[in-house]
Length: 156
Image (cartoon, rainbow, N blue to C red):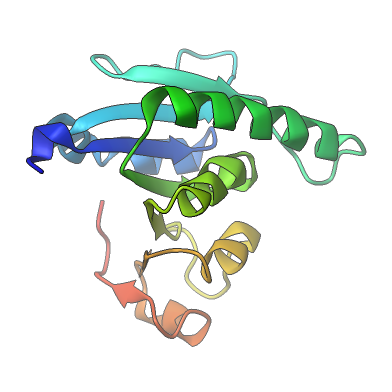
């Protein structure tokens, strides 16, 4: 299957995780790609690539589980519509459903732990570590938490 025939989902929550995902824009342009992110007040669409929006999720809010359920259904819709071969994510919580769907449908899941995490793991990283086909960290110190991770240094 050629690069242009592979479909890649790039998924990240808003803010810093999304900014780090955008650093992979050259990779997005090499494949049939689409983006999944959280809906915010600013325009998060990537020009030239379809963008799908999930609800923002904060695990400290009382009703976050309902937002996760809605995101699970939205993720299923996106997954069945787009049928990606690979999901690449920088996290976090709102992206868990699309990542787990990748595994349910036997697709590849690539997780990139945040550049900001030098001495402690993210909750999402700890959860998805066991599911990821490739798990990247950007600091050697993070191998303490993710011994099988691949450390490439700063990949952005």
